[in-house]
Image 1: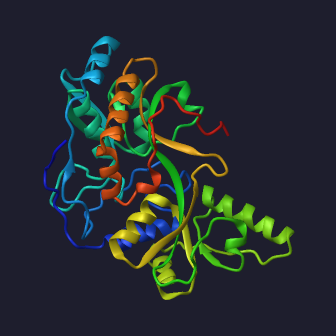
Image 2: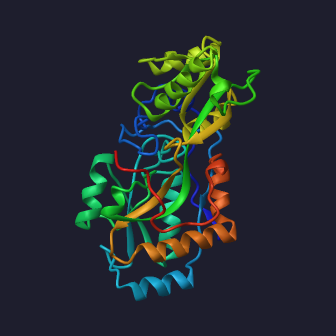
Length: 326
């Protein structure tokens, strides 16, 4: 495992771009917390983002498994990986660069290297990846995809992260934790309308009211900058959105902190996974690479660099239990 490929990083508008996403549920699809929806490619990048791209060596067991699987890459010698270009830390294009950086592209590149193939990323809109995988346009997708029972009918998955939602408060807030309904009683919390996290808060409010306690005051903002200002100025107590973006904002700006996380499919746990066309033989070699990365510490290095250690898993699973059909 080696480090190289310096990423162009510039101080810019990332605080607004990321914290705003945490606040009101735009740009990264808070209506589907683990499903990154395509947005215009941001040119902003983080002032203290990881400066290096993490690499690994080919994994002999995975290379052998790939050869035995009968899987044929779309382009010989390459792994064509569908990735997004949304916001840090998941996937974004750093200023001065042309290819996406972030956890998702780096996981995709590590898988390719572990398989002994050249990493061939293709930036795709969220709506385009399912047909692209099915039609053979892309070999694999690593773009914050949640495993669901419905998706498992068409795709094979190898898990590599937990899907979590996070509560963020001001760095100097006296709020130490938000983990249960009692913890939100009386608080003003920014949440996206129609999102999974709104459902969580509405259910918790029902519990509070039934127990004779004050519910949380849910705050909805159409303007992301206003939502961010509301949190930092103390007009609201917390925001509730995808943990990945909330954790990155906390690390990048130092103005917020994470005080609690819940599963993205609350009350059910959801997994983020690399996806490929069902039955094509690729998923087993991919899982071997991912488990090798976990075992040798490379996986932990990637998560730590992007402040996503809380979303780590102990082992990659093939087609783990997915969120149920709606």
